[in-house]
Structure formats: structure tokens, C-alpha cells
Image 1 (cartoon, rainbow, N blue to C red):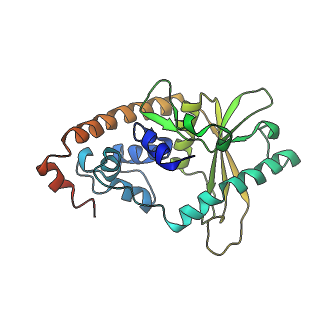
Image 2 (image 1 turned 180 degrees about the vertical axis):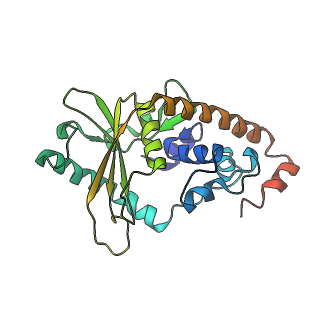
Image 3 (image 1 turned 135 degrees about the horizontal axis):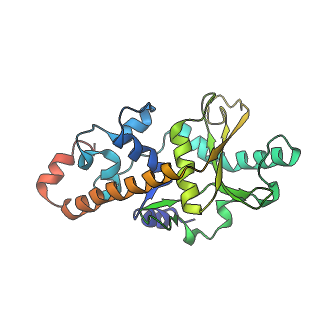
Length: 235
């Protein structure tokens, strides 16, 4: 996939990986990791939030950190090991022969747009079907620490992917310590994520609400007064 072309298409909607930032911006009381709070910036109104300014093209997105980059590089390997566990009966729920990675799709088709909310989009990691043929979104994560429980922001991303794919189920597959610098891989943890229509409706509404702010910023970002108020976030 040509990343520049994909980024240009992604600029027309919120990606599912951006949903946690919208959720946290709407409810700052939620527990969240530092990197996610940094996406929000200082909560001085929607027009001053970092992720909104990034989407509007006012400031550049920060590059992924070393751990995140290592994790992304290993996601295909994680999927392969997960499929092998499915074949051996260690993991259950998905027909291993049905699993497909996003690379099996023509890159021009990505991201996939939600049919009910065009400002929500996803580039899925993978997908598969269960024994009844029901489609499931498969989200891959490589962590730097142990993950005893499924974080809400990961589960939320899967909900968005289910919405965009029209899937009725989803799984979060995590390789513990797979992104750690010491190189000692931990176990693969798998959480099933049940589709929650209430969560999906809220996600769609937040995408619409925050997109209105993005459009407003895009219309006024050349104004000198606006540029001066946003310059501190751009550093």
C-alpha cells in the first residue's frame, strides 16, 4: 500500500485507532495511558485538541514511538502464530482457513468506510469467520508489558472495526512483550469482543460531532489569529 495515498484518503474520516482519543476528549475522567492523553493535549475546547488539529492539517502528526513501531512490524508474525494456535486447537472461535490479513485487499480499497457514518473508517489488521460463517474483526496488538485485562481503548477500536466491516464479532489478539526491547516474547492473549450497538452508535455520533470542528478549522486555519492560537501545539 502506498502510505501517502492511504493517508490522503484517511484524512476524510476518523480511523478506528483514533476513536479512543474522541472518547477520552468527551470524557476526560476515563483512565488512559499517557500517550493517549498526549493526543488530546490541554482540554481547552475542541478546537485546541491536538488530534483535531492534526486531522485538520494545522499541525503534523507525531511519529510513532519505538515500541509502537516494533509492535507494528511484528503484527503479521503475531497473526501467523495465532492462526497456528487455531489449527492446533489452542485458540478457538475462528476457522483458521478463513483468516485473511489486510494485505489480501487491494490497497486502493482502504480505508473501509462505515456505511452508516462516513466519517468513521478503518484499515483492519485481519478478519476471519467462525464455524457458522459469521464475520469477525481481528485486531492485532504487540505490547511492551503484561496485559492481564483488555483495555477499554483497545476494545473500542475493535467496536469501530466491527461497525466498518459489518462484522458481528471481534477478537483482540495481543502478543505480550512482543514490542519490548529485550526481545523475550510472552504468551499470546486473546479476548473476544462482543458487538455493542450502544457503543457503536456513540462512536458514530462522536465522529460526526468532532468532524464538524475539523471542518470549521479547515475553513479558518489560514486566519492569522487562529494560527497564532494553535502555534504552541504545533511545537
